[in-house]
Length: 133
Image: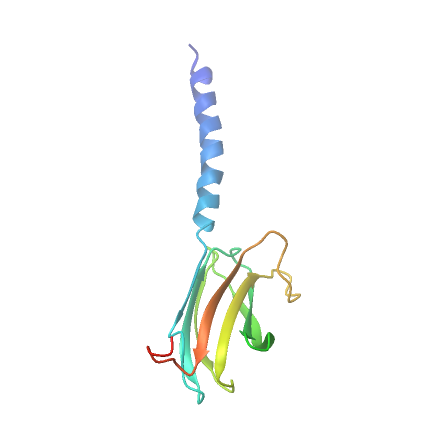
């Protein structure tokens, strides 16, 4: 059997496995916020995400759940693995329950890119006591 007949299946397998492994690495979608509540006077939060488009833009909206209105919005840039870690200060927000929605928006048009990632987290102002949860 020729070396070419042995190498060809190996090359084909490698060319199929590498893109699969790469797509699986970017497929881990995750978002965390710490802390997930704070005071009306303002507080610092740490946001961490993974699973978005690498080296692109993620749009975020802070949505007042009761009124379904956007209280704040903006963009974060993703790193080479499609994630970001940002510390930011939340202030000038009324008491209530909020949802932070993150989504891929490479062209920064304030709209979710077609067939791309969208994640959301809950945020409360002020923090709720264990008796009220």
